Image 1: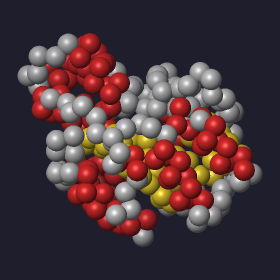
Image 2: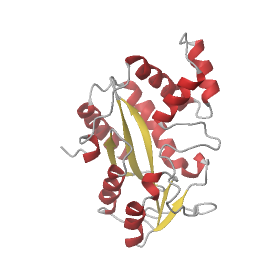
Image 3: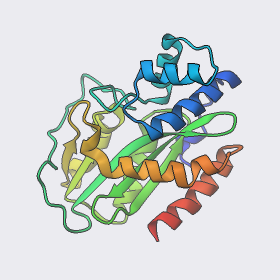
Length: 232
């Protein structure tokens, strides 16, 4: 079925319907205003009539892997034992395909649960080279995504955030073996990976928010259609 192993081998404890509704509202508002932190999102939900505490909003944001665009934790938490690489794209003129690839993870809502989507994009052409869905933030689905992308070509530089999935020895080892330079965003600098951040915004407004995926199979089918639409 072309599903990643991460989407099948583990089923997390389900969230309450109320939590899922709050996460949907947080996701929508955060996509509009990524500079909103816990305080502003709490105030936004209260204005909508939801009696929520800042602590609860903070817990849900951590589960979703989002934070305001000023210095913050990334979707995938940093692992202190993993090597962090220097950001190589500052002042770099990117003027051809396969010069720089970038990758990131985003929260994708379904009607009764949620998934995580990883994608790899060519910085110059904005082409999505590969993507995978998972219901957990294990590194396996990121590695599968990387291996699939590399079957189509090879960049000179590969850029990610400092999340544990991307700094793991398995992930960086594949890049080193392929003689690809490794670049990582500065801490709390969302704009360092702005190309794929723009893609997430397009994906959510043009696809995810227009549909209510009932299950993983439906989300996979519709996301696959959108990726082809977006690329071509």
